[in-house]
Image (cartoon, rainbow, N blue to C red; front, side, top):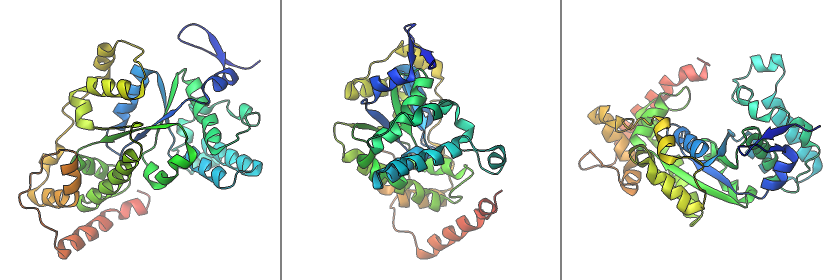
Amino acid sequence: MEATIQTATGKSIDFSTYYEQHRNDPVVIILGCQGSGTNLLSKMLINLFDFAVIRDRTLIFNSAINVLNAPTPATVRREDARIMRQLFPSPLRARFTMGHYHHRNRGYVGLADHLERLTPESAEEFAYRYYLYHAWRDNARHIALKCDDMWETIGHLDRVFSRARFIQLVRDPRDNALSVMRKNFGPRDIYAASRYIKTRINAYDRTIKAHPGDAIQITYETVLNDPHRFVDLFRDTFGYQPVTDVDAAIEALKIRSGNQQKWRRLSAHDLRVSETVLKDELEQFGYEIATPDISPLPASTIARHVFRDKFFRIPQKLGY
């Protein structure tokens, strides 16, 4: 007998039924740089609108692209096998991998029993088998996709998904640069971090502009200071209705409204460097620019910051 999940209404539903009910639903794609606050946005979708937010890390999405480029049963089998090896590695393999996937595989336990039966007719259906199974396991009504690396393959979104809706969350780029510098990957210098954020903001911004009517663009600071504004915007734009008391749900999130304007701690030099790189983005999204008379950085300054970033990233290259 196929396993079932009990819904909020007390009814039991198996995955086969759930899949048929939701296979044509849209997917909401959350676009944001690392450190931009997409985790908070995900919690709001989960708690207020009954979403399952799948943190793909482009594992499934990239496999869907491969299926799109070579739509054969052999490709589907190969990509299914590759995904399952990443999600459920052998004990030896798990010891020598970073665990990005298998440490978060709870949402896919039991999926292997369904993959062969669910023969996808498109790259979108290939991905939906995984996303909808995750949503079924979470007992959620809707699916959203969160991947901080989506910018790398963002040109394929429209090729894979025919019913996508988009949210771009933009954090003050200076704060975002500082946040990404504290992570165990990527840039270690303010110049490199600012360029890192600039590239990704612009990639996501182009996607939003290409989908008028199917996209939301909102700042992290707006969500912090006025979370109801995001709830209203999301509801009015896409038609999803909150499934709980909004005030109580927002209160339960314990939003840290003070988590902003970290850039004020920067030295005058580093602030000038960051604002010079990010001037266009700061102006586009209405952020204050503190540096007077911004002018291009001298080549010697850029070279010094590039060297500094490479030097401080040596431990990353060595695996520390």
